Length: 211
Image (cartoon, rainbow, N blue to C red; front, side, top):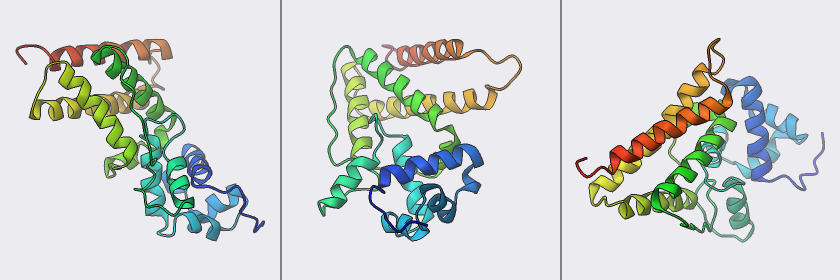
């Protein structure tokens, strides 16, 4: 097996790990199998994740929940190359842009978040015990909190609304994955409509004057 590790990055390792999880489940992921899939020795994987599988799992959770289109591993890789510290899997710089009304911003974010969770649904169970605290996560929370504040919420209600939104998105995806192979399961377009309907109802309820 090749000892040439050029081009091996955290991003590549995480993506390959997700491919294995998709095909074999979490139980099918091992550092040796991952090394074989990457055509490197397992020690090359440990070079990027010296604490082993638990560190890798944390990075996968951060990658899956990242608001960045390319995930969170790239920012961490850049920080390591420059000798800077960064939280596991988190990009060292995330710019949050808030165009449009507050509800449009939350809807856009929720749709992207849902799509990402669905794409990596094999890793959903990792999110039960892992809540990545990365700069990408901080940027996302700033976007969500800012939108709810703009909608008229204040104090603890902003955090409560944010929790409700996250819970809806994750719960909706789990429900969709659990039932998508049912005989009477709706098609992809209808699943999107149902998600949007629930999201719209949630946002209205959270920001109602008498909530």
